[in-house]
Length: 200
Image (cartoon, rainbow, N blue to C red; front, side):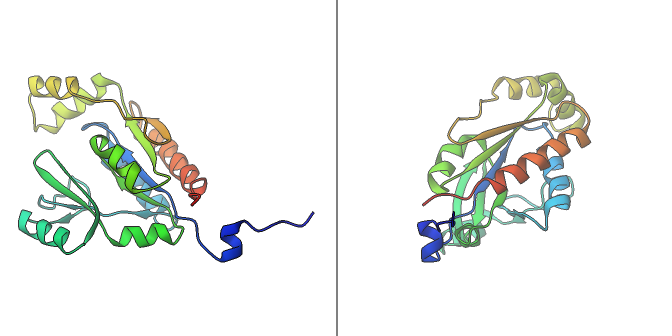
């Protein structure tokens, strides 16, 4: 039987690519997993570089640093397709991301649990990868990082919120060896990217 083209194929239209938001609490190892995935999948997937109102640092994600004034100016000029505020910082996704997705190509972004409902409304076909770990493992990592004392770490863990079920969610447990979680993470990203063409 001859294959019939879909209306999109017949008209030459391209279905949008999927945006994959990676979320997880501080200390869960999200930045480490994203760095490993970028090295393995950089030729296959676009890993979105966020603009953040904090200085660049070697132990944090590779972002575009901006002052509050610079961020506000870029936002006013339409330089971002999505913005949010958290922890006294501003975060922005570049306007070029919308063109990338419109071309039918997937992308991965370091996301935030609190704005997932807004992201789902802004980016049809959004998918979520939730990085988790045993609370005791997270606590030990946060204490070792040295930015907070034990009481502050305990308060942070108590405030941890669940991931809102506004899009398909894959869970990757990073309680053990990083390379094991990295393999699961890469597999989840590949699968979501391949299955994620969005119907108009």
